[in-house]
Structure formats: C-alpha cells, structure tokens
Length: 202
Image 1 (cartoon, one colour):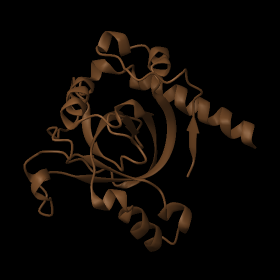
Image 2 (spheres, helix red, strand yellow):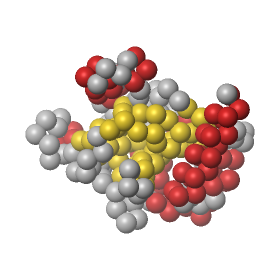
Image 3 (cartoon, rainbow, N blue to C red):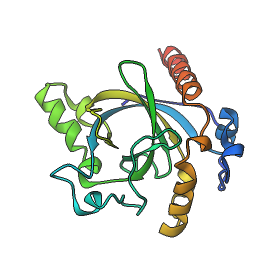
C-alpha cells in the first residue's frame, strides 16, 4: 500500500472548534492532522439498497450520526475501518473526470474492516496480494464510485477515546464544508508531496 505522509507539526489534543480556525491548510497541519495519499478499494452503499442493514435503512451511521450524501455546503458520509482511518477524518475522492468530493468518516462495517471488496476483486482480476490487502472505503451515495483509486486522506487521531456523545458533537462540526480548507488545495499539495517522497525513496 502506498501512503505518502506530510511532515506535520506537533500533534495537539484539541482541534479547532470553528470553521474560521480551520480554513487554512497550514493551520490544519499544525493542529495535528495528517494529510496523505492512500491507495484504496472504493465501494458504495445507500439506505435505499435492498441489502442495507437496519441502521443504514434508518439512515444512521455506527456513530449515530445521520448518513448523508454530498451537498452544496456539506460533506458526505463514508464508512471506513477506524483502526486504519480514524473517525472524524476527511477523505477526498477525485473521479476520473477530475471532479472532487469530500466525505467524513462516520461509519464502519464488517465488510469494510475485513476488506472483502478488495480480496474479492483482486482475486477476480488476478491482481495479487498487494491489491487484496488494500483498505476499503464505502461511500454513502447513489452515485457509483466502485473502483480501485488513490484518495487524499486527512487523518485526525485526536478523537480516539472520546465518548459517543462527545464524538458525535465533534463530527457534527466537521459536516460543514466550511470546516475544511479548499479541497483543490489539499489534493494538489498532497499529490505534490507524494511525488517528492516517491522520488526521494527511489
């Protein structure tokens, strides 16, 4: 798995409380967020699907936050393995046509944790163990994101260990697109740093 991580400032236990404090990309790094590029297997799910579990059909995530699709002023919801990508982190997905959408990590599931989608498709396409072990992200959307892809991940480990009520309040703050710096800037800088790291390592 290719993960290229930025050098960041000292991790702080308390993150920004308002969008105004978080709009700057450099401020985001000094608050202890890690920005990296990660190779993943993307899948999609939605409450309208016939195979959705009870909580998803009710439109609720594993953190009890309401599941939502990307909106004009809000980020979408995404399911991850919280041991790989912590709750409250942001994932920026850029499609093949160049458009980017941002998703907040608020949900998880057994098939995401055991990387079933990676193992199944890697076996079908005879891609080997490297692909089979890729983390799975499950995007809450009626739009089809099903593919292998590289995504930009903004990790925040400061939310680990919080009670569910405190975690939910922090996640609600991050649902607004105004909490985060420009996704265009984040993607361009993350890709540039990945290229620098790749050249350095080779």
